[in-house]
Image 1 (cartoon, helix red, strand yellow):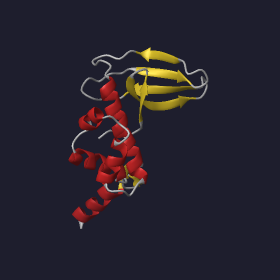
Image 2 (cartoon, rainbow, N blue to C red; image 1 turned 90 degrees about the vertical axis):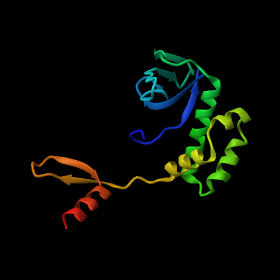
Image 3 (cartoon, rainbow, N blue to C red; image 1 turned 90 degrees about the horizontal axis):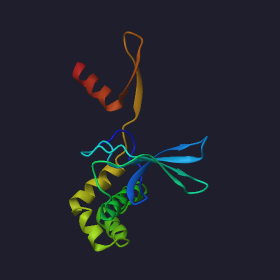
Length: 156
């Protein structure tokens, strides 16, 4: 699983990309390729000017080719994740509602129902709260609450 929250996938210039951050001083939005950190490890990045819509290429894509079908599949999965966070529908009902917006080929490539259930489950899972813990050498370290509970249970 990636670190941090999964961000929505958008199609930029035919490529599936994720929004990284807003660049305030240039009024642009920075996008990274979704294959960053995956097998192909593409480090492509684009900036889009919010006023003009002009796309500025910072780094080109490498290790994979543009694929409109793959981009639509990633967009569908991203929409499924975003909708699952705020919905209480069953995974099947959620999948049926979102799949009706896409072509049959995209829906087929999105994965089996069990894969979709895992996507929905991960999207709805809330991370345990993180706590600040002091160590002996006065350096602070952030650990999860469940880790601390397990540690206390092991000691006692």
